[in-house]
Length: 175
Image 1 (cartoon, rainbow, N blue to C red):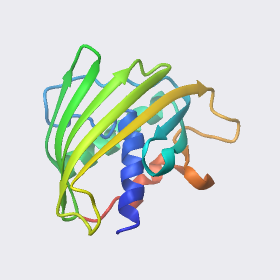
Image 2 (image 1 turned 135 degrees about the horizontal axis):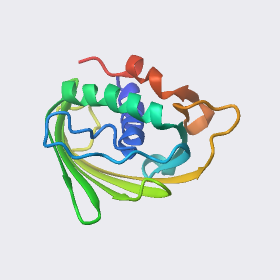
Image 3 (image 1 turned 180 degrees about the vertical axis):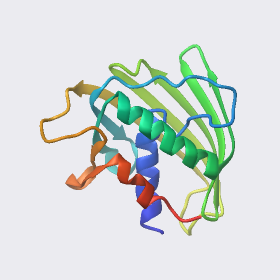
Image 4 (image 1 turned 90 degrees about the vertical axis):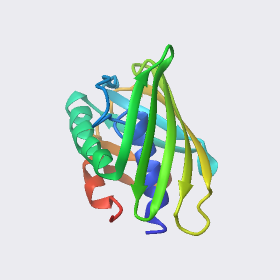
């Protein structure tokens, strides 16, 4: 669980970058924009500015919204999404195992060429060494069509690990 939690958080941020981890399953309906199909570069500012690449299309975006919207509903007791002048803001309270995380997430950008996701979380009950407060910034930019050896949902993780987003269900931390 200790090793899986950081990987899960990185993946959740990548998905959150696409707006999917923040799908308001039980808040006022605010439509989250879909990303432009193709290859997106996702840079997370933590742990040496980790960089991932994700291939997506309209069908994969919808599938991820359904899958991770259901996960968010399961893990989060409260979630509220509001449009702002510069994008969207999501307030959420979620539980992963024994850890509770109260987060404020701001999305800005156009989802066609680039967007930024800034998340500040106050954490309690987590594993030893988990900071009480964290801030993560994810910067995403569209870099073109997916590569010939990629299919929608593929993510190239730091260190060259390749997986498909559809495999995330199996990686989900146990409640």
